[in-house]
Image 1 (cartoon, rainbow, N blue to C red):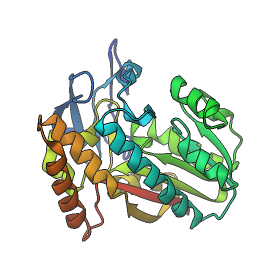
Image 2: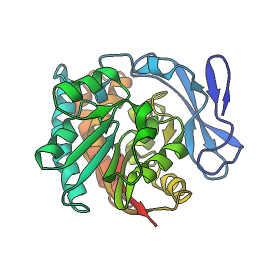
Image 3: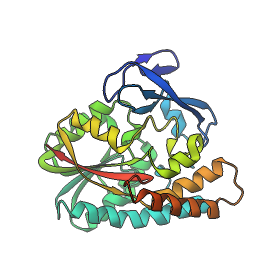
Image 4: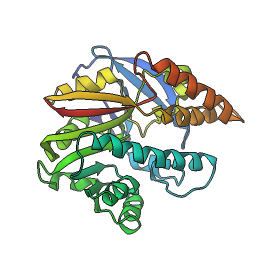
Length: 297
């Protein structure tokens, strides 16, 4: 990476190290600032990433409407998000229980802590990492979560947790390889690592193109497919053992994408697109968002 006064230029692909890129597309931060951003594609491994990256990334999260840190029920989008989140919490718990019936879990990017609160009620030992101060305080004070700032991740002892999860978080992390190393170090040798990521190869991504809300530039720095994710983790002697969809995401992502297209009645279009995307994705398992379960090789 090359840092200038206001931006960071990615000079080598984080996945394969290649230095030759092509333009993938130009888009905007439709969610917040409306600023323009570009996505590059590695000419060797086809990994796509936001390039350049703003130096001051924190200001792009400074809105009450950023839903990953927004726990109050307000407008329609917030209510839909909250309902989907409740359903997903149960599903996430069931998924984790397939690999570890009970034990300890670290959730990196735990937000306001609802997921960890659910695990606590089921008898798990829990800890959260959350960079946003306001979200972290809600996790601590409202949901009774042991949550710490992201800068303290290096202080967590190795082989501490049965499960380490990152639900739609890895795409936000500046140094991908460093974070994969962190997750591997903190997870017990026979433990489980779980990553949820938007899927650039999904049918709804291909439909909406630059308006696809899961691009979410510049908050999303990296734009994964299953293939690029597997290449990344294989560098760290990790293996993908299971991949499954987050089917609700196709509807939520489509609803925001329709909003970015200035559709005055986005619900019907989003519902139809979500259904079509999930149906088309059955053949190749390339849904709008994917959950990847990872183990040591």
